[in-house]
Length: 189
Image (cartoon, rainbow, N blue to C red):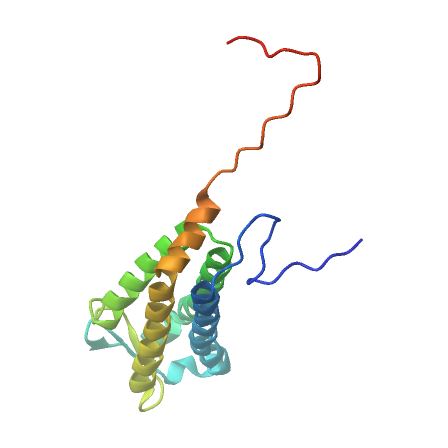
């Protein structure tokens, strides 16, 4: 008999508490973060044929068209992999957090800290691709939006009722002892 899987707000097993509202909201924000972080992949796939027209800067120097052409397969591969990995991590953290796995909120917090460093310019030496005027501004706005989504999700995951939910899922339940059959005495220890 087929039974549909319960949603995030319902318990997975009998006796497991349902996710509280802050956890459900955090999961929705993480899914929104996955959608926003998928936009660069869509842009990369749409403009993959015109990569030679980009102006790539690495450590403050512009690469020539010949250098970009030489690195084209690597640039395309890295662009697609990065475009797939980032949304996949958002979805993975959302699903694990919705199931009450405490490690997921810890990893989400660490990733938010890394995103904070990245947004602050700590990784300014990474390559920057200039495809269209204003793409840097759009990239910063996208980065700021995903940072805000991640910050709100992490804040919700560490709220008191969320912490109670994660603590309850981390406890190991011991099955009750079986009653002794009539007429049998327990063995001494």
